[in-house]
Structure formats: structure tokens, C-alpha cells
Amino acid sequence: MSTFLELKNLSIGYKKTLVSEINTEASLGEIILLMGNNGVGKTTLIKTLLKQNQILNGEVLISQKSLKTISQKDIAEDIAIVFSKAEIPTNYTVEELINFGKYIHYPYYFKIDEKDKAEISEIISKLNLEQYRHTQLQHLSDGNLQKAFIGRALAQNSPIIILDEPTTHLDEDNKLIILNLLRSLAKTQNKLILFSSHDWRLAREFADKIWWIRDQKLNSGITEEILLEHKNFLDPHIFDINSNFVSPKIFAPQLEKELLFSFLQKNFNEDLSLFSITYNDNLWTISENSSTSYHKNLSEIKNSLQTRLKSTF
Ligand SMILES: Nc1ncnc2c1ncn2[C@@H]1O[C@H](COP(=O)(O)OP(=O)(O)OP(=O)(O)O)[C@@H](O)[C@H]1O
Image (cartoon, rainbow, N blue to C red; front, side, top):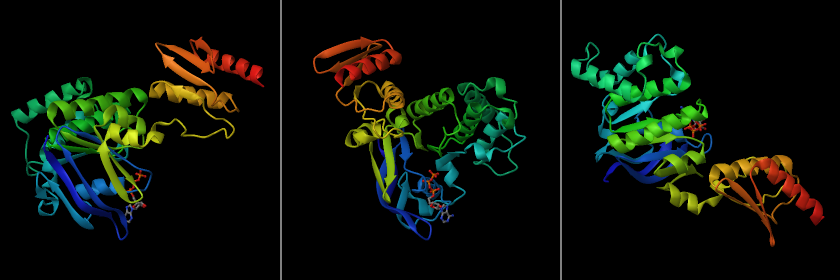
């Protein structure tokens, strides 16, 4: 894979610098998750790449061309942006929206030709939007709306697709559909996909790399390497609702780990660090010194821990 997008000593922001000395790169076929707390500058970075915001220092190279030499009009040849829900144009159908992706290449009076039409039909079918082809955007579900915007970006045929918080308004099912779709686009169509989110769980499952903004710096790396370096990102201690509660050691896949943590935190006000709880083959094992017990579900775990705590104290 060769580098397609390079950020060199890049500083971004407004009057005030938000992130400085960004040095990183990305290749076609990669999917990159842009992370960081509210207000760190994720949208500002995206706007800078789209030339909607001035570079404060350093440079951006797309396919070895400096962004400074690419006109704002031509940037759409390189980067497609997928809008979020807030920006729905009303009274357009799915097909009309996806057609717009083609217009960036032609003057305003242009009419799309047969080849473009065939390509648009293929995009609609790939996104499973056939039955909504003539539906107006305001009547679509959030997931299908997001797909229609992705369709527009695909019609644009640009090598880079950027999405600002694409999953924020989506339920879990739609989130998975969209993320799987993005992953398959990166891999099968060799697109470079950059999307921002607050959700670290998405990183592990969907991103090849993380760009992570903190303390005015952008850290970048292979997802698993960043997560190994910062194990606390994977700890489920996100919402500390119970100050006396101390978690047992939990050995389980991330989702089960988070759910068990959340369940225990709601039900115990004690230090459970003496216990280890392991999930394997749909069975939970509680170990404490030399005693071990097996449980099928969370309520059984709760009963067992309560009994053990009573006998300890
Ligand atoms: N046009 C502007 N002029 C000056 N400051 C701005 C402008 N737009 C945004 N900012 C400020 O820049 C900072 C970063 O904003 P930005 O939207 O890039 O953050 P973000 O990381 O995308 O946040 P969020 O996760 O909340 O979307 C914020 O403090 C914001 O108020």
C-alpha cells in the first residue's frame, strides 16, 4: 500500500491553534477512525482537508499534490464528504441525491449519460436501496438516509471518503450495517475512508488505524497497537456510578465484559477485586482462591457473588 494522503507538520485551528505538528499518512484501502473528545478539533481537521478551513502551518498532500495547489472546486475530485442528518435537503429522492455525486464532474447544465445512469443503478443496488429509489429523503429511516448519502459519495468516484460522526443518529443494527458497508468499500473499491466518532469500541472492530487527538496533538497508529498501549480505553470503567464498587477481574470479550461490568456495578456496592470472572463457551466461571463455580447467566452470577460475600464477612 502506498501513501495517498500525507499530513506534514500540519497545524489546524482558527485564530487559536487547535492541533499542532500533525505528522501522519494514510493509504488507499485503509479505514481510519478519527477520535477525540468534544471540541478537540476533529471537524476542524476534516474542514481543513476539504479546504473549507485554512491551514495554519505545514501541509497536506493528496497523491503527492499539495492541497494548496488544488482549487476548492477540484477538491471534490479527491474527497467526498458524507453529510450527517442535520443537513438533509428536502424534496429530493434517493436517486436524485445519488445523481448529485456525478454533477461535481460537470458544469451545472449537464445531463447524466447512460453510463452514469448504469453506475448509479449499481450503487443503489449495492446499498440495497432499490425499493427506496424514488422515495423522498425526509421519508427515509436514519440508516437508509445515511446509506443514500454514502451513495452520493460513491457516485462522486473520489478516492477518499470522509464521514463526520456517521453513526451518531443510528441504532445498533443500522450502525453495524453502515460500518460493515464502509469496511467493504475500503477493501473492495480501494477507498481511503476517514470517519470520526467518540466510540472506542468501533475502533477495534472497524478501523485499521486510529487518528486520536488529545492535548493538541494527533497520535496515529494501527488500531490494535494504540489499544495495547492504552489498555484503559478498553476498560469498561466509563461511567462510575457507584464509588464503593470495585470490579472483579473480568476475562471476556469486550461486549460481555462491558455488560457484566455494568450489571455488577448496578447490583453491588462492594469491593469485588478478590474474584475473577471468566466467560467461555457461553458459560461464566467465578474463581476466588481455590473455589470455582459455573453460571449460565448474569442473575446466577449475582446470586453466587451475594452468597460468597455473606460467607466471607
Ligand atoms: N469558525 C470557527 N471559529 C472559531 N472557532 C471555532 C470555529 N468553529 C469551531 N470552532 C471551535 O473550535 C473548537 C473545535 O471544534 P470542532 O468542531 O473541530 O471540534 P470536534 O472535535 O469536531 O468536536 P465535536 O466532537 O463536539 O464535534 C471548538 O472549541 C469550537 O468552538
